Image 1 (cartoon, rainbow, N blue to C red):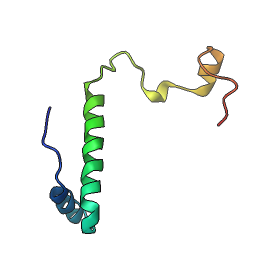
Image 2: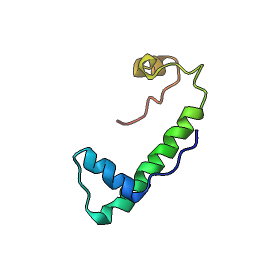
Image 3: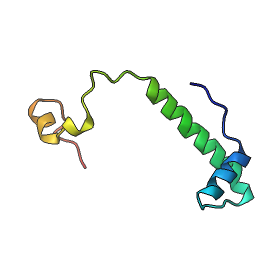
Image 4: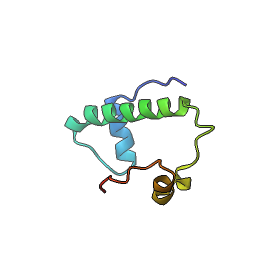
Length: 75
């Protein structure tokens, strides 16, 4: 799914609609950041996670007792 990139003007309008008016010197940076986030999400959507268990099924205790965790790791 390819879509056109967000322009600085569109970023400014979207921010204004969200109640976050931007200074004119921020429009380009916000658009670039939004476009980058969109490209990362698009890449993630293409990945096949069919056999990957949900993150809620992971516990540190299980990882350590099954040898999947690093017992020397610092938090």
